[in-house]
Image: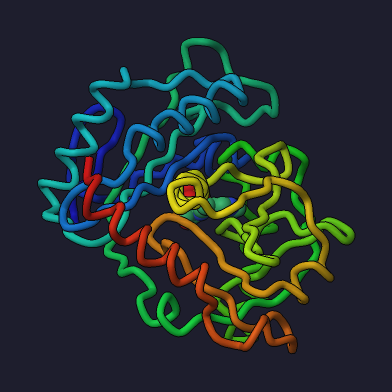
Length: 281
Ligand code: PDD
């Protein structure tokens, strides 16, 4: 795991952060976490599409051509012999004297990617996990996968302190998503999740799960729902890269449904596992 991609070269991991890198000082950059299963990327093209979109939204031009970046990421997984884990990739607006406004055009962005061992949460996938509720205090462009994660960090820490898998976020009464995953509820056989607008990240796993629901003819609504809807749902589940699909059986002190993973969540957990086997990029 000791090799990293730094701009366009694969090099030994070493201390590289410049104190005036804008990612380090301002969180001025974007990132992706891409799942690797059995040594292969899953939905790599979709992650690169989203990286390009995030970069465009913050007016950052990516330093590498798409095809070259994809080749380099595959090489990174090969040289580090990563079997199960993720590739973390981030691009910042580069190193420049610290002024809030963008640096001059001759400042090149910094791209860094490295591999990280990570297992899927098989135990929680099978038995369900718990979550807490906390206010969503993030900005209004949560659709951009930026490096600014302090509200997410604080929310996740609160969950960990309460031995929960996730912190589910609400803006007022409306459930948006979770600190590092999307949230779905099931009510009367219908799967409901927040629309993919500026208040949530349009998860790659979320999109795959919506496809799976269509294949299984499970009714889906991308619409807002409230804290009450969540607590009274028949089932709740969360989705994210490498976490995959995890049923949530308890939120704060409230049991969800029977307090065990429900049938629709289980169906989606299995179908998602199958789709990884079928579609390894
Ligand atoms: N996070 N919502 C938020 C706020 C997230 O941070 C993530 C993923 C998701 C799910 O997106 P996807 O299915 O594309 O992974 C939703 C990654 C895993 C992270 O920051 O580590």
